[in-house]
Image (cartoon, rainbow, N blue to C red; front, side, top):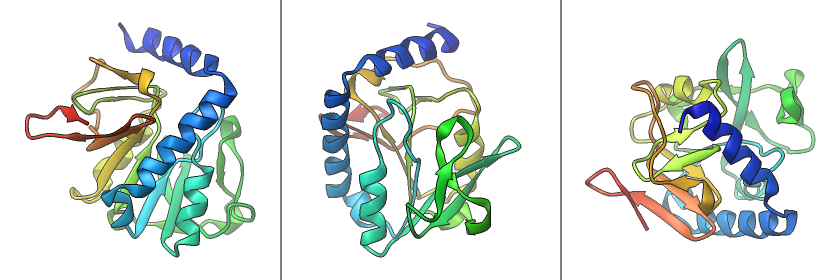
Length: 195
């Protein structure tokens, strides 16, 4: 299925998930993420701030801050995504474009992507070969090459978002792992996600 049609279909499916199911599945995804070695071992974590029907991330963000680790979130301007440190979810963030919580300009603290240990990424669809279908802006595909090669890049997804195949381009960046309400899938030596 072409990317545009798949985006529309997956957004509709995600929006149709009842709020109580979305909340329960988001809590399970957050729990699996918290218990993972890649999360436990990371000091600097780049986390998207959820909006609408995305897998909710506010609890994870609060946990990162409470643990004394560095939380950075996306700040997108002029076609580029930047990592900005956040020390308070209430003081440092405000709704930006499309209602997405982002760092308020007077409180921005940019961070070099090369310092990031873990990227927790959103998406509309993912496949078992590590491909991610985003919203079409290409922000993550331009941002991820700036991170260290050993940084873990993990998608957060409801299980219905994980498909056998997602159309991809040569410049699209792949994930190392996926977390859904069913658990964690890691990339094996053959390049396929395994539970």
